[in-house]
Image (cartoon, rainbow, N blue to C red; front, top):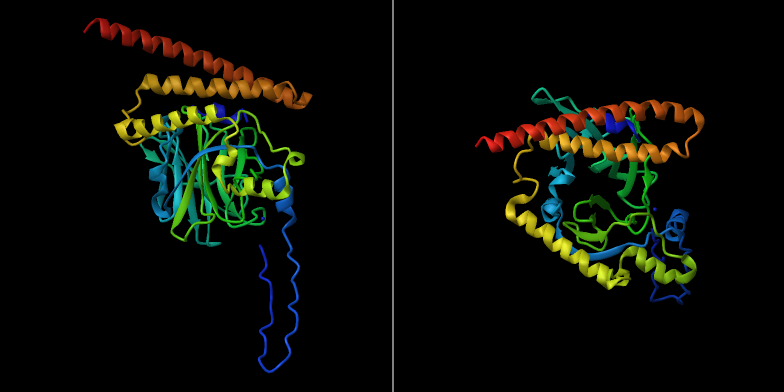
Length: 346
């Protein structure tokens, strides 16, 4: 069931001429530091995020240190390239090396008839190098790392959404600071079950290390009011110099730490992605219904502000999806009844 998919910047070194012991020293000339203008633009819209914890780990296996819940799907790495598989195990986005341009790009494949289809390039995503895809449970919102003209360092973090009408992703946007930086920023993942986010970067780290930051996702985008912060302080927050500077609500931080401990315990107990029980047919139906309900909610919210022509197209898709949801719900009730009857007969 895929219907839900259709409803949605370096500092220059100061040059000093070496002093000649036999000559009179000349005053060093200061070089003008030229900063990428996009940095100032990003600073002005730095998101106010609470980072509750951080850890430095080996770069090659950092995925194993992130206790994502089963509902998030799975992330795996091979030869520094990552792939994401959804919870149902039937849809995959991977970073695949392309020999024609010597870059990695996001590809898509589906599990149909007991085999994975041949990966194809994800439509709508630019030709910049891309890695670490993470698809939200809505099946629409995709986060990834990209390196190219729109990044201010190495890899920056971008977000895009799938447009079902064109069967392609929309133009990806840099999610900005504090997540994107002049270093390499790799992964951005949200665990809706535990209301936690995970962000991976190599800023201020040795070549073989990365830092995993744990944060509390905001329901709506919040930015630091630039008039309330000095430029130096705003830059510090954008760099995440100290996570304690972001603890604007200590109770909320403590509660989030409890959720993090619960997520870790769940992973250790074997209820994580690799050891969970196989999903039953009823589990799959319930998941499809839940995702479709979320997509319908997004579509209805968009409908209220859409143009008349867009409304006509969206109206038809909403009606079709509502009918499919009704069919799913009927099938779920049927399966639940069968399950109850089987229990009573035992």
